Amino acid sequence: MPQPPQIRIPATYMRGGTSKGVFFRLDDLPESARVPGPARDALLLRVIGSPDPYGKQIDGMGGATSSTSKAVIVAPSTRPDHDVDYLFGQVSIDKPFVDWSGNCGNLASAVGPFAIASGLIDAAKVPQDGVAVVRIWQANIGKTIVAHVPMTNGEVQETGDFELDGVTFAAAEVQLEFMDPAAEEEGEGGGAMFPTGNLVDELEVPGVGTLRATMINAGIPTIFVEAGAIGYDGTELQDAVNGDPRALAMFETIRAHGALRMGLIDSVQDAAKRQHTPKVAFVAKAANYVTSSGRQVAAGEIDLLVRALSMGKLHHAMMGTAAVAIGTAAAIPGTLVNLAAGSGSDAKRDAVRFGHPSGTLRVGAEAREEGGVWVVNKAVMSRSARVLMEGWVRVPGDAF
Image 1 (cartoon, rainbow, N blue to C red):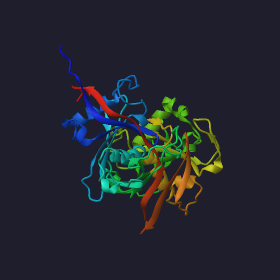
Image 2: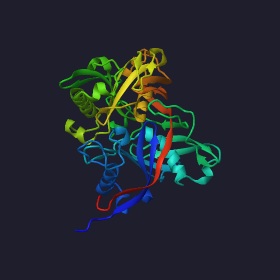
Image 3: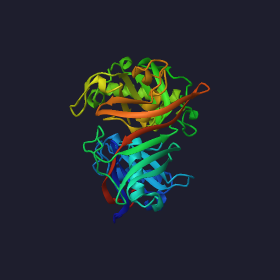
Image 4: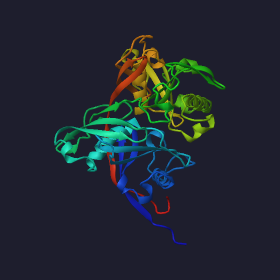
């Protein structure tokens, strides 16, 4: 019986922040995959190499972690005052599932460079030298990201001396502005920054207990709990959590019940169908610790400690969107993040530097209170991005 040949699709493999993903121009995808649906999901699963019961994604472009099992689709924007639309797919490693429920803030840093290099930006908007400003519509959650992309001799500058903890080599800095980061689409907890109406809730979690939690929609829906309440001190590295099945089950239970309380799902069972969001993070006051690379971080270098889980595992650094949630929550007096930073119940912060497993990260947010409601204009942080490979990705012709 004859077997179908492989087809090839133009693609670019990029690092953005502490993540990697396969980037596509929408018009380069096979026609059936240019619209949401089973064909698109099946194609991206095959590109990345999922589902893989071995958990390695050997037969695809994925790297067997949540940070490297990602796909991005970019197209000219149909929105006024925007340059491109950015759609992100978090590809499950061991299940036939692509989660479209959230953004990837790390890969957002690569969208502007990709769009410029791919000819998706009006040439008149791109300086020969200096900084190109790319306005991105984040299509998953319906918000604006402004990327400031360095240019040299008419090309995106990728090399530089900007260092990002969690990335081995220095590169050029790309500054990102997440505009109105709490303005989610309908269905994301009703669009409220604090979907329960509280800065801190008592969250009942069967088998765990009642935890104080800050549940916030900013950057990405995130559930913050106190490290000490779940048996940690906030200095943990990946192995301390990812090698403990009971801990992972505990975090998934917290995530499911938090998602229900936030109005993101209709039943606890629905959490299994929504793996990418919400995130769960635990916070603690600043303390000395050793990073995954062996570097000593002194308590005086940071404002607080944060550890976050992505796709069921402790992240090796920090997700970009979770960093936006951290910066936003830190800016608002009384949240668990703000309190862990030692701000006091009535003090807001314009920026924090937090410690994560790979090092430290600074993120800022502009917050103000209007009529008893907190509003955040934007969150700002810097990442870097680099093309790793470009050309064509190949998949069997009957894969989608």
